[in-house]
Length: 171
Length: 213
Image (tube, one colour):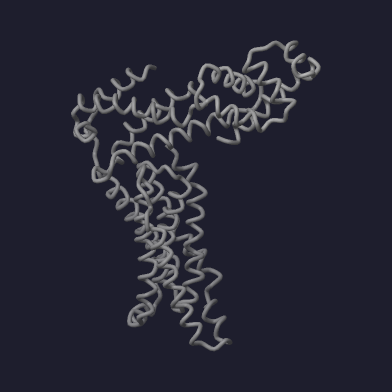
């Protein structure tokens, strides 16, 4: 269908792009379970890239590696751009949102978070798990952990900051 | 924007895309680059005056064939790296074998010579200027190769830039060989290679910034 599209058959090309969008969504989602918000952006970027670079497809070669290489390139590009954002309040919000966004999903995202959290020291990990993942209050968290309320708050703050830094580096 | 709308927009008003423009683009870029490099060499350095005599020596032809072979392998690498999803496969091995071939020749010529002759074989009389002149002659080719690549879609930018640089360096060495008076294999294996490595390194450094899309 791509070949027909390349030859100028608009309807075949439309069908190809629609199927491609679904395929790319699955491809990107599998690799970006941590950031469901970015998936559609990258899908769109990749679609545009496939369209703009369609002259670089060699009809003698298999199509899938070509598509995947483009999608992977756009994926890395997007992650790099996100990684360049200054680490400040935004990044903290992002890390915090990430924890919330991860909550409803039981699958990969949750496992990623768990793996990241394991890297944090106890004093930061426990408050984050209790407050951000289980939704408890500062007072409850302080009681459960035996830490003071200010220590709980500091732990959450420092832990999120460390998580944001780790995410940045892992990109 | 919704993805569905984007798809409709992209599909609408789509002109047929030209397939297979890569080769033409490279031919154009490298043709002009080689022309510019040759012109600069002829005007500023001059072709070696004893070219006709030198052309009778087998080593002179080896000196031309070697960068030509490297250029061919680097061109193959550059073409593959210009398209998403193409693998390099054995191209790096080929490049390595070509370099090893010259080092093999260099080893033989050193083994045949006495130790006091070694510095003359390795350093020749122009080792100081040779790599820099090769790199300078490679510049128009580097610009051309990067331009050709920019119109395509490399996904590994540093590697792609490096391949473009190596291609330019090998082309520059090929042009420079018409001027250069040296014929010793050890000299070629060291200083020509150094001259080609300079644009390759430049290409690899510039690739990520210049080749993005």
